[in-house]
Length: 528
Ligand code: NAD
Image (cartoon, rainbow, N blue to C red; front, side, top):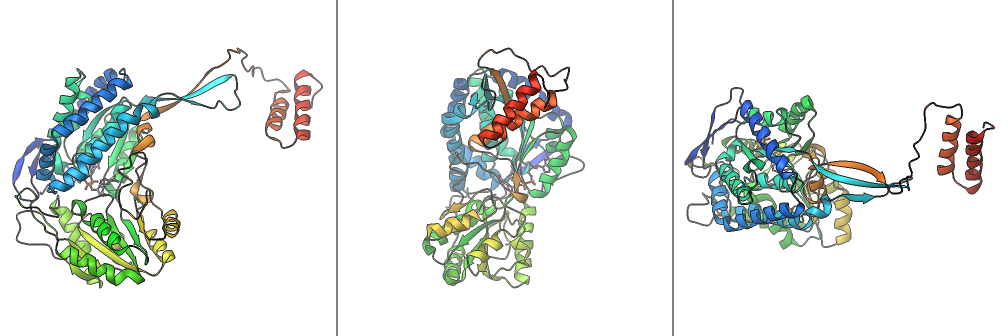
């Protein structure tokens, strides 16, 4: 795939290529700024209808969407694999499964977290206070390529449940499959006599993505790289559009000297090589303590050397597939070669193939990685296990926190107290203890990062509510129509207010009685 990540003059079509074989899949027209504006307007019209629907209707639509996905799961997986070069197993486990779980969770819990919520009125005992969760309107989703199906569905499920419509600017690298996923959504809406424009796919490069921000969306959910996250904020400043940024990661996996070796080895292999490493939650830095270092390195190196790689749809089972873009292969290789030049030991892979029609990078293990190597702090987004030796818990925590990213993390130890103590000190949006990545599947948990990994949360209660205007409403409990008559301000107003504040907040009966007396004097004469 040789498609520009950002272009000054937009090509008007996207050439779609299977990255594992080089086969041409087709082409997709690019949306220019006017087309994006038009799509946002259409989505807004559809949203007006959708916003009037009950939670029961929204649940029914999402339930049918889930059925539709389950009925077409094989086709969806094959389309994902053709477009992104990933394995069928990863498409089923990493795309269909989390989307199905998110739908199940949202259908079950959406109303609970989105209906009006009574809260305390504080001092105003004669009033009732509640939070109302109103839809924002049109949610502009800007998605990356690594999970072509899930990256689209992840934000739109809570957005729809909360009464919004969506325009989804998909990645230019997976334009082909997203056209199919758009149709699946339109078919579901049509079956309920709802407007098909509730979710509209937008195709193009950076300029098209920018138009999603500048041409009328009410909230932007951007998932992508840290440098582009900065550009999203710049564009959103023009109209003050709120943004949720789900950016990259360089997640640490800490393996303590008392960890279960077998568990740590297998989980590290998944954490690094799932989706050929093109995973925002990838275990990009394996921090292994002295006592277990050599045994761990030996086991993972042998396993990595035996991984089978190739085109996923060619008839043979493979462990890892392709890299979605030629540029990404270059980035991975640059980081690997820099590490090797600075003394990292290559125990598997480490050389890009020259004889393949597709875009591959071999499963690679680098041991004895040190902090001055770029691969310790720059996102690899590829099948590279980066192993750094750490002395003890404190050293592991220091190294884990020493970079600009903070998406997720994991800790392995048989001593749960120790693992929890380490976990609490890692600066990240999530930590899995003796596991990897499953915080994402536990949909009740929020998902998002800190530091350069972004801000805002998807998933769970917070993810649903992020798609709403959380409106504060104060209402009558007892219709006591006694307005606060502030104007005209009297000579006693200041003293009376001061006494009232003392009455409420001073400690001790004596102080309160004194404040009450001052209040009475201020109100009924006699001065302070
Ligand atoms: P990317 O930043 O290059 O592109 C993401 C999307 O933004 C694409 O649709 C692209 O066309 C669009 N875009 C690029 N420049 C833009 C601009 N100036 N204005 C508006 N839109 C613009 O990311 P990518 O290479 O597609 O994906 C890989 C990155 O995404 C990695 O950094 C990865 O960690 C991150 N990611 C994060 C998560 C998460 O949930 N935190 C999930 C998946 C991927």
